[in-house]
Image (cartoon, rainbow, N blue to C red; front, side, top):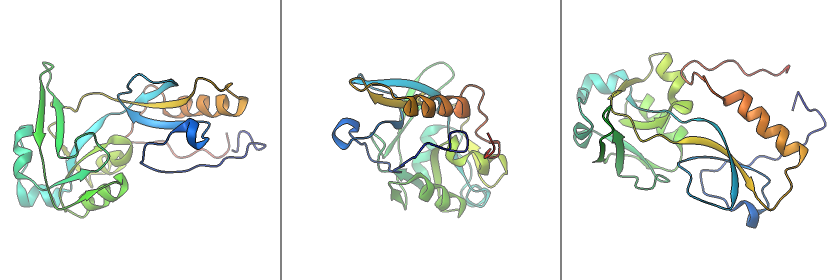
Amino acid sequence: MARYPELKVEIEFTDRFVDLIEEGFDLAVRIASLPDSSLVARRLADNPMAVCAAPSYWDRRGRPSTPRDLGRHDCITYAYNANPNEWPFVDAAGRRVGVRVSGPLHTNNGDVSLRAALGGLGVVLLPRFICGPDLGAGRLEPVLESWMPPPSGIFALYPHNRHLSAKVRAFVDFLAERFGPGRDWDHPPPLATDR
């Protein structure tokens, strides 16, 4: 908005899946492995994930050495995952493993999951854009880094049947610039308000 002061923005933050056409949105930012759709998608960034917990949790419960060990841990699950009680992993050789998890908290909000993990409640599987600063500061510690969830991305989506307006194009370009290749989620740059 500082860059384009004539721009008026209305933002709705929700983790639910919105129908852009039915609900009249110009654009959505989605984190996923995208299925085929009638929407135009521009990949903004990769979405690296981390399995992590507070140091106090690891001290109390020990660290898992394989994904299957998570079955013995308190895991904080996320409601909008395709299968919330199964965390997917891929090892360095490309083998996929699905691990059944459960725990004391099931939520539909990544920030709530983060706060619970910081409080020592359990293990989370979170995008690094949510937990990265806490990993970088040592408030959370990652495990199983050689076993990563299948890759997904962060996409800007907009309907095919709408002309891409200058405002939407400018916003998508800004997002691509801000979150593009080489992004270090664990050490984010400060917000720039003078650009």
